[in-house]
Amino acid sequence: MVPGKISKRVIADRLGWVDKMIGEIRALPLDSKPSVMQDTRNIWAAESCLRRALEALFDMGRHIAAKGFGEAVTEYKEIAVALNRRKVIPSSDLELMQKLAGYRNRLVHFYHDVSADELFEICSSHLGDVQQIANALRSWLANNPNIMDETL
Image (cartoon, rainbow, N blue to C red; front, side):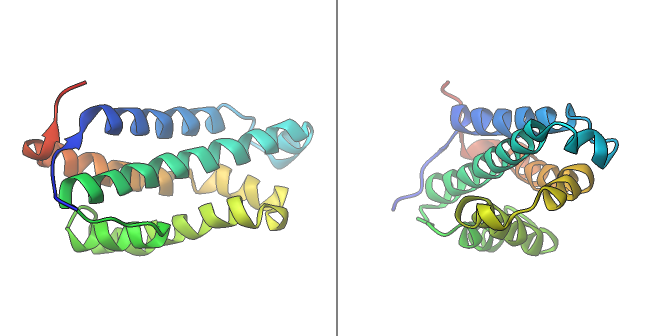
C-alpha cells in the first residue's frame, strides 16, 4: 500500500459516530443499576451503542494506518500496535486500545458471554476509556494537518 492523505470526511464521520454513541449511552439511566435493569431495552441499547462506538473508533484507526502510512491492518488489536508504532497514539494508550479491541471482539463474537451486569459496569464507569482513545486520535490529527485530505 502506498501512503496518501487521510480523509477528513471519513474521520469526521467516525468521530461523529463515537461521540453520538457515547452520548446515547450517557442518556441512559446509568445513575443506578436498578434503573437500568428495570427496562431490559436499556442494556440492549447500551450494548449496541458501545459496540458501534468501538467499531467506529477502530475503523478510524484502520483508515489512519492505511491512508496515512500505507499500512494494511486487519486485526483490531494490531490497529493499536500500528498506531503506536507510527506515534499516533502514545505507548501509555497502547494497552488500553488493545483492551478495547478485545472487548469489541467479545461483543461481536462472544456476545452470549457478556452479562447485563458487565455492560452496566462498563457503561457507567469506563466510557472515558473510549473517549480517551478518541481524544488521542483527535489530538494527533490536529497536530498533523498536512496529512489530511480536506475534501469533503
